[in-house]
Structures are given as structure tokens and as C-alpha cells.
Length: 100
Image (tube, rainbow, N blue to C red; front, side):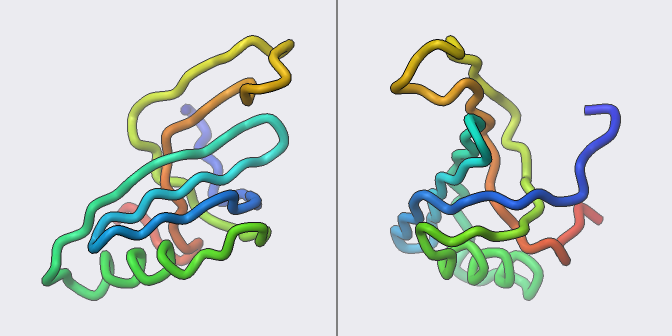
């Protein structure tokens, strides 16, 4: 939190597009990143580029992304073979995208 990462390589697990909502799930090691964003129909170029990027992600691909933190996370037992150790609710964005 004090030193945010600029970007990270993740493996895309799933991408679900429903209209202007995009739900993604990805992982790095035993850390899962999961999140949904709903975009507006008439959006300016900046959010439109993120929408296009997210909906074109391919499951199984390794991608260098920025992660937009959605405000929560969940820690599971590291001994669980069925659950990731850490789930961070975040969405992937192109590395060119900044919060400015």
C-alpha cells in the first residue's frame, strides 16, 4: 500500500462480458485477482480503451497489467488445496493506463 506496484504479470483465468460489464479472474502463484467493472454505454476514450482491453483478454494468456484495486481482499488458509491463499478484488488494465 505504501509502495504500489507499477505492473505485474498475471495469467488470465476467465473473462465474462455481459453488455458493458466485464468480470475477470486472473492469478499469480497462489494469489487470485478477481473483479467486475460496469462501463457506461457512451464513454470517453480513456475508459473505452480499458473496456476494450479487458474484454479482449484471453484465458490462459500471460499478460503484463496494472491492477485497479476495488477495495477489498480475502485471506484463506495456505493449507487449502481448493482455495487461493489470497484473493485481491482488482481488475486488470493496460500498463499505459494511469490513475491521473
